Image (cartoon, rainbow over all chains, first blue to last red; front, side, top):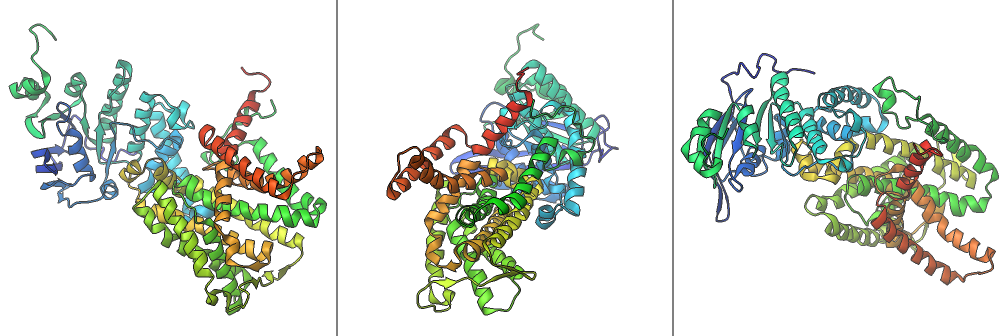
Length: 273
Length: 352
């Protein structure tokens, strides 16, 4: 598979800031979902947003993604300040994401779902598609090859042609990751990739996330509640509570921050690992 | 073991992505086409061809068109009759007012209908489901009203105008067999085009919008452009079906012939045949055309002749019940039942 940023591996991160969020505020009427949130995501890192329920984590992701537009503050992506833009424009700039509640195309097969993820890479026009000539056929084969590699990578071979609506939950999560990967994004947003999974599935998913980061050099920004996973995977973490940032830093810094412990992690008994 | 796929290995993605990847299906399809092109014209009487096969072929084309929109892109339309009328009247006016050759007229009529479809598809950008259905219902009534204005039938005193002779590349389509062949050829070509579209990136975009428009937007699909494209392509198909309906089947044009019942019939076809299936559109058309004939023949054959009025009531009952049945039990229609049968036949008679 094309490692589009082979020089950037997870162990040797560049200092380039891919995404910069500055003083973002998001209001729905009287509700202030986000207040003065600022952080930086550097290219090639695994960045986590954590916090209790209703802290504004998904809202933050939706802002990055173009679903919501911040009431004030700026989001700078690849050095360009972003204006209010539609999600499909964000996608064309190399941002892909998965959802907390799986948002797959249930009537379509696994393969078709992942192929749809290649959408931005297809150029064939309607007429070419209608008569199956020129780019239509050529592109279809190229993308099929690429998607087969993703299917191999995620171990989805056996459900290639199964409608995703009938797949078990864990597999659906994996297909959704596959669909996001198919777009070859620079920034991958994962909204609770491990919610509702059992231990084994979590381990698989954690391995996939690390591999994606390592092999393809994708920058990952994820929301997750499983602290073990977050602390192990992340390079840096930001903690939100009631829309406000209460902590930021490396996993060690965050897990020792008294404010974070009070709001979210809870006090650990002596001797408990 | 009628339906075997074991031992058929695909060595290229191309072979795997073919329209009919299985040998059995390929043979079956060739058989169907042979029967349609060679056997039926020889054995079918003029009556059968005119009253049964022609409407079936044309309805099948309209059903494919509507299925592209409803079954694949998930945008409900009740304006099929109106769009067929647009196609028919566009072709008639082009034929009477210009000297263009017939194939060009067919194409232009399709394109004009596509444009009309896009225009009435614009509300789909804001509204979904039931509300969109009502909007397209308005399109149906508006278009029929518009086409009854005298300019469209060239100030004909009766409002009924007769269709011109269809001349395709020097082939004068005159006898009923000719008309059957023309409708069949157009249906085969357009069904192939439809199949190509739905298996390509365009079709995947439509299905993505249908299944989850939010997620579709997130991977970079522009909802507006995609929906309007579906309206355009669907209306193109329906427009061509309208031309065939007026020129080949009715032989004369009248806007009222494309009323709301035509729209409903085509919608019934795709619900019964199978939403999101090209084959289903064709099966559904066959079903809806055949049921009235069936009701005519069977009860009198078993000694229970039904009156004409009764037949039309029973017909409505049957469609009603079937639509409820399919919507609740099998939204993918007869086409899905057919694929289940194929699934079973793969292993029959050994279930393991």
